[in-house]
Length: 303
Figure 1: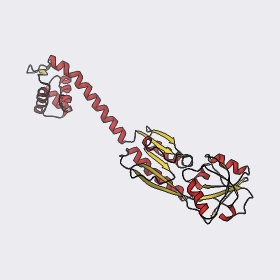
Figure 2: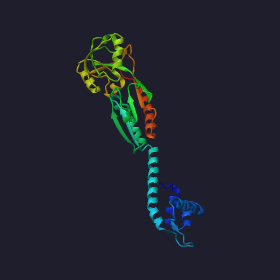
Figure 3: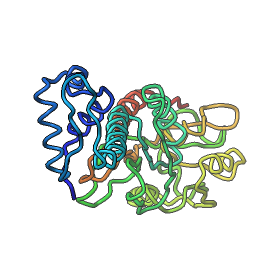
Figure 4: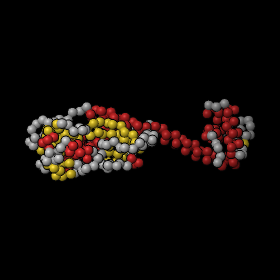
């Protein structure tokens, strides 16, 4: 392996283009002696003369060995330039970002985040992966929105917001205002499948002696709410899920605070603790925290 300084290759190509060491020095901003030193050092590294130096005003000429070296020098310089440009684009946010998400975030926080990232970094490559698994695969994402802390020392959590639960009921099922949990004991209930944050909610209800009668489980927010609209039962959903479905009080549904309030769902932004984030991933995490703070200050309309 020949150890060659890229500066020497730059000097070589300049000397060939200009035809003299003096004009190459002027082009590069060097003293002529520096050009001579670069060429001499390159010749030592290569192991032979690269230029015939006729002296006087005549152009320097490449030796046969120089003719062999020159195209490789040009190729190496082009690759180094391409690498530098790629690094600068990476630092400017022009890289790939893969975000893991789930449906409530996908329809509320995430669209705002993507628009802001695209405004700042028009050439960024954003990929999304919706994960509803209890044990998400962090190896495939740079950032992950998740509604549970992950008990792993290799995982870094940033809490984005608390997501309070509300009761969504068919219009007229309950009077306006908060609903006592006791009224839900034995009541028909439409619910999410027993994964992610749902088991913690049902365990808390049971701890308070509340055992709703689950009549249907579905992962989709729209499906759960459509069954509530149909009168199949009520549903306890976090605020983001209700907002994600663009549901407010209206002709078919009413939204109620719970009394006493159950523990709020917590939304986290998760990443590998020991993996250095790209500038784009770091900026995405910063923006996500700002968006979540703004979202958390908003109130849920209830009756």
